[in-house]
Length: 455
Ligand code: NAI
Image (cartoon, rainbow, N blue to C red; front, top):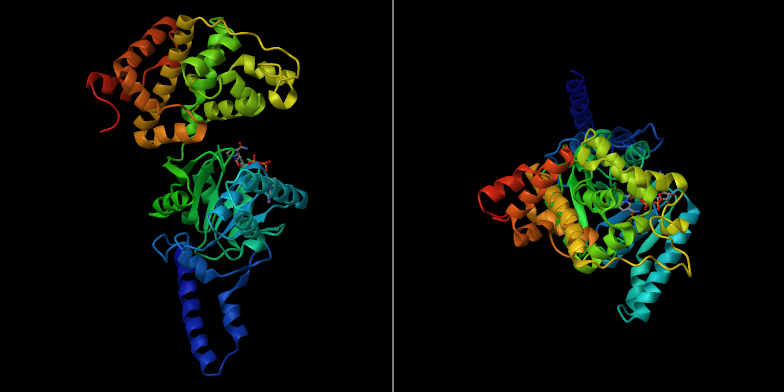
């Protein structure tokens, strides 16, 4: 009923505008007449165009603007991620407006970018003129109104749903009806963020990884409401930016933050069970598994507070599925303030002159450790495919491009033998009697049919 009334009012408004436009050209009306019909003051104090919204709220309406070559890109939030995204977009040739409510964050971001580009020039990766041009394409602002001309705005503000929703509401009254809005959230639902918009179909998740200019992966996450075709358009744009897009369903942790959970969780479990010490588990994963960093070293780099919070949020989002249960030991580290490198102590002690414990270097034990963590990762990757979170190709691309895994997990499973994975998981489930070790139906099916994941 209400929708019909609004549509009726908008049709009347369009008709009135056409009449006024005709009068404008024949000298019978002023621009002000037309403007008053086109725009009305929004609750945020900016000016809204109801007709634009009327069109924009229809998913089949005029195309969104991302595919235009030279769209200006707005980046909101000039912290770790925002400045990296601004660097990527400017390097790809876009004019960029970097917005932060905090002036000092903008100054810091530009100083960091200046330093990064100087280093690139010193290393001969970029010439000074080009570096100057790229930096010259980035302007800064503390007011969202600066995004008025942006065809794409990516937010990278604090991970808080209410803050992001307010931000998008404010952005909608600033940008044009054909602008695309994107969120870099790692853990919030894109669908819930879109639900707060007048034009929910224009919102999409673009999840970059830290450090954004170096890690190639971008998870492209459509909301339920996202306009058909926008995923492909954004994936193409990301490729143009030199990135590797992987399309993920809007589910907790998307691809990487879900599939990677056992890298930490199973490592901690092995340590808690007394299978090996921290140094030996890190050694097994790096020396024998080819991972760039061991799980404990990596948790210390990420910060135990952040890593614990991600595990806890995935666990809660999956209704306390025991596969993701957070660990007491990591919680105790957080309670003690042993956050990792940033606090000087985490799983390891990070202080000059402190000698690290030596790993046991027992190859058989190392292989057992590697295999148990790996098989849990493989199970998680297979389950993500089973539940339609992403294609096998995108799952493997995501783990290599987002967290630098030495191989795609599903390809790895095929190499070692899918039936061997099932056998190990069934053995663990029988031994512990825990749901944590339940085998993914897809893994079991592949083993039964003697086939791999890639058709
Ligand atoms: P950060 O804390 O380094 O930076 C956030 C910036 O946003 C700050 O400069 C703050 O002043 C600004 N800000 C906050 N509210 C604002 C508002 N309403 N309007 C304008 N500016 C505002 O945060 P970080 O680490 O860059 O994270 C940003 C987003 O990216 C979060 O959603 C996070 O989950 C996500 N993310 C973070 C990764 C990381 O490793 N740091 C990796 C991938 C995603």
